[in-house]
Image (cartoon, rainbow, N blue to C red; front, side, top):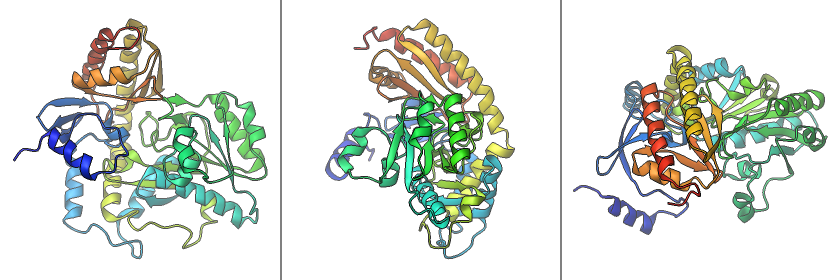
Length: 404
């Protein structure tokens, strides 16, 4: 018997904890940049699971690697060695320049690991009072307690206080404020090189320079939260590289497993030297399935031309979005890099998201007035053209005040 959207909604309303505001569509199949709902309708996917489906949906090579591994051996725990952790770690080191990797299951867990490792570093140095963090206004690092503590939005934070302390938030438009925020009790600065949930807002070069300066002068560690920006999304292996930032730790997630839950904390040698067995761990982190998938994704970036492809189609994407903005005054700014783009609107983005979905294009809303676009890294120029044509019609159909 065919399952309908109403069947799914009814089951979820009875049994699933209501922590998400879902859109009224249920997907059952994917192919490349396309998703198909329970009724067989085709949607062009410019959300890609919030940047997770890096190789698109049902990528034949990734599917074959996962299937082969599932039929061979999924998990043995970190009590034992297996062939794939070292392979995935070496590829991450090649992309990032950081020599050590801790594997986990999500971006939030990677942030948690980075926060722990920063504190452990100072504890090892004998500076046990260096436990604080400086984070960025508008930043989002996750919903677990440590990651939530360095996430700025009070709507996320307030219901769960008290959180990890002390944390000081700095306005990224005020690089001069960073020096006074960092004290002899600061373990690390944590900042997304480009804010994702905060509206696709890159750090300025001036703020990046301020991070480098204060970290060099005080020894403070810098954690680059690249859960959304990392692994080619912006056309760079990591967007911190585009800004000249020199992170001691990098949090990675989303794109790493191509859809298989994977995260990683990338660690400099000086921090790694402070970490001892038992300081951190994960039952599932780095298991055979996850690292086999990660190795496949990373090979696509490093050896199969995917990074160059992102740079090419990313430039085309920017041209099409800027042309779109010239035709529609509701779009006041186009931000981002590569295949991570945001359209700043004069009104709430929800009617644009809803009407685009009705017309067969999936985009999403962040920071209320921003349309976020995160297509698969394998997207083709023709699919970008199709998506921007749909958006052209959507903006034309939504009145200037944004009410439909």
